[in-house]
Image (cartoon, rainbow, N blue to C red; front, side, top):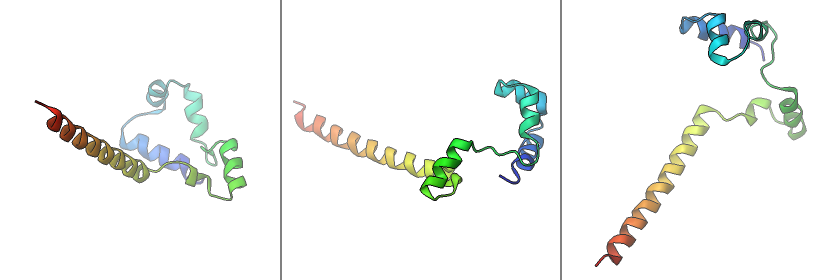
Length: 96
């Protein structure tokens, strides 16, 4: 994925953290961080690429985006609210 290393460096700079700190927080070696900061590093595993190719989709289409997660969360909350409302109504109707 072109630009991954550049974006990682930007995020590290924005958060004022260096390689050693990111490595410590992530529980990996500094060398791992240096490796993934190399131009041309591909953060998407070969297995995901193979599955995406078999399905004829972009590998990024298989990774949930923040918007997708937000929509899913909102849907779940709507369902829970609806269930809570029904249960509340049921409790009120059956209470002495």
